Image (cartoon, rainbow, N blue to C red; front, side):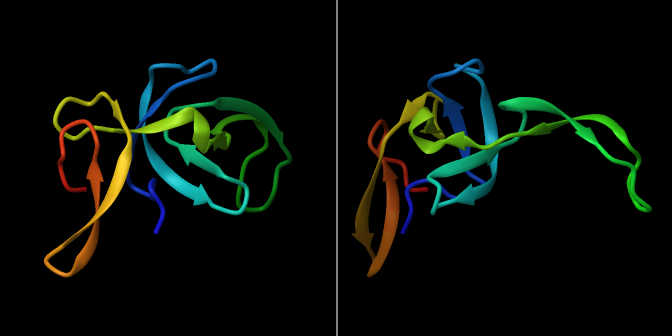
Length: 101
């Protein structure tokens, strides 16, 4: 079970987007990277195809998971995650407030 998953709200801890918030769009566990909405935007040249127009497009690039932290659901600040067994199920719990994710 991973500590950060697709759909989680995260805070960027380091880099050019430090302090920004976003939602995880995609996780890449083999590369230890995640794609976060609105964070680490890069501009790329795209060749025109039958379905897509060509030109310079902006899109999110992957960011290393060491540079992001889960946002606490109560106050939105970065927090660490622990695992606990509650009602026979393994759940993720925030270290900051103890909230179950």
